[in-house]
Amino acid sequence: MSDKEKLYEGKAKILYKGSRPNTIIQYFKDDATAFNNVKKGTIAGKGIINNKITELVMTRLGQIGIATHFIERLSDREQLCHAVQIIPLEVIVRNTVAGTMAKKFGIEEGTRLSRPIIEFSLKDDALGDPIIPENHILALEITTDEEMIEILETTAKINDFLRGLFAGIGLELIDFKLEYGRFNGEDGEQYLVLADEFSPDNCRLWDFETREKMDKDRFRRDLGGEVEAYQEVARRLGISLETEDK
Ligand code: C5P
Image (cartoon, rainbow, N blue to C red):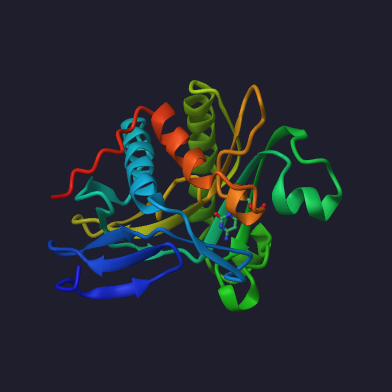
């Protein structure tokens, strides 16, 4: 990777300049962090699994008409994407109470919600990614009104689709995080597209029958078996983890 121009190194991914204009390469690392970088470790092979799961999810979402930044997977750990201007929001969807919501309201984890919640956090590590209400986002001009409407509609559609996709392989989609970006089309128009990744690093997936956690909570909570859990999610999605790199 040394011949590629590094644009940014995050906690789980490195971004390089792509070979074509206005593209980037997402390189998926095995590094895992939690609680805003307080807990650090690695999950062996995670980068390969998350690259392939993200490819599958982005491709399927593209097939139902959701615009994404994803172009193609290049190798075990790399994927080519359109360069976008990331909107600095974490868009969080909750179908079932878990994590910070369970803690904040003292509600038992696993309590199913009567309807999904979409909430936002400001992407700012120094501030600890604080929750930000919609009226703050609009007043601070982090998005336009039109973008907010599109984010809410697209996110609801993604949730409906992904809940079904994971239910079909015996997994309950408890919650997840999305990021969106602005993409400058060749027609001079700006489009909202789904960016970043979708993997067990940024969602919660529980086995429907056993309610066993199959996501990053295994790492966050020292439950062990994180490699096996990520591999099992990939296996159920029909993803081969055989290396394709030479
Ligand atoms: O932390 P919390 O319980 O609110 O997380 C809700 C969902 O959003 C989880 O699936 C978690 O993995 C994801 N998330 C994330 N990145 C963050 C915060 C939350 O992927 N910075």
